[in-house]
Image 1 (tube, rainbow, N blue to C red):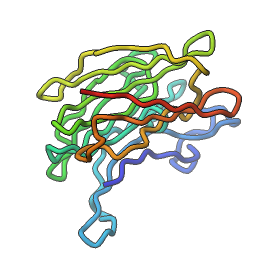
Image 2 (tube, rainbow, N blue to C red):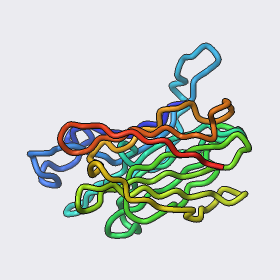
Image 3 (cartoon, one colour):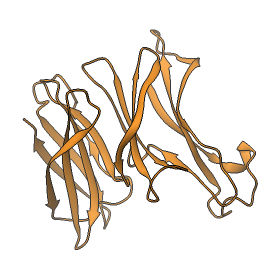
Amino acid sequence: MVIAGRDTEYYTLGYDAGILDDSFPYAFDAIGAWQFDSDGAADANGRLDIAIEEFEPEYVPSIHGNYVGDALYASDGFVYAAYYYLARGSSPSGEVRMAVIGDGQVLRNEFLYEGGMGTAFYETREGALYLIRMRPEGGGTTKLLLGKFDDERKGFDDMGEWSLEGGSIIYANQRVTCARGGNDAADFVDVIYPVEGNRWMALRLRID
């Protein structure tokens, strides 16, 4: 399965040229999932719409899964996909939502947390689901927050937060680099993230 957003020049979707600034004429107005068959080919009829919003005069939605997005195929057989959502009904700063996909359909699509920051899922060997979030802080530091989902995976509690020295995280945000779920090192999470000055930082978390 592939989770992807629609990123195209807005006039190709039939929107009025006056809606957006011509210096950045791109539409981020939809996100969906595509299922692959057993031969590895994408099913043209298998797109699942997760979120789609219409542009309006003086109102521009922003729906995407780039620096705030992640997806995890978990041991319970469901896909958990996080994405950023700024549209009517969301908070002014936008919010991160989570879609749960299974049996060829979107089973749940719900609020995860307000605002937007680097987001990644992680599942331990025992099947506990965690949420890693990272955001820039003043003074050249990066804030890392770790949350643990409840048993029904409908919400999470923050388990800890840390201020990381060495640089403030920038756009594109963190990448969880180790294999996630089931391997011998699954209780360790290796994270790399970009900081100002064309540099990258790395860290390892132990989750148990």
